[in-house]
Image (cartoon, rainbow, N blue to C red; front, top):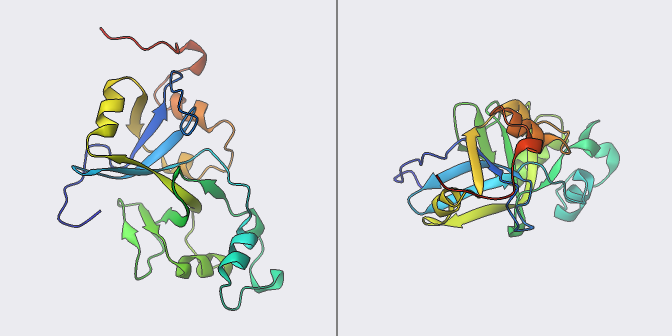
Length: 196
């Protein structure tokens, strides 16, 4: 997001797919919206894992000094790599707490930052990264007015994001827990959209 653009009302919100969402890219997803402007929106799917490990990412990037397992700290093998969305699926982004800031780190809120450079990957591998973080390959994007139209068509519910849920590693129940933030039990939701 460019500095001269105003933040949108969906910045820092969760998008939660309604049961009627048929698009396989977004069925039963929870998305964190990190940028919403008059030009469109961008976010990351929080509850879909990618079939790749962090050590594999390190090997693929050939980051100097991180070629062998003993070159990085304990726990790195379990670092979460998520499917951020269908756009630019080969590009990596790290969403993280505000206790890390590199030269290209973009603040998203008072608590949340986004970094998309190898510096943060190196820091995480060496145990010097942010307190909480997750890596996303790809992102979800919407052109001008598209997301607002989808919300008006009852494709999405929205609620304020919850940092604990963003970084919760238990992906399987994240959809139900996100619905629970609004007091909604998914078993009581209908797949049929209606308008009053």
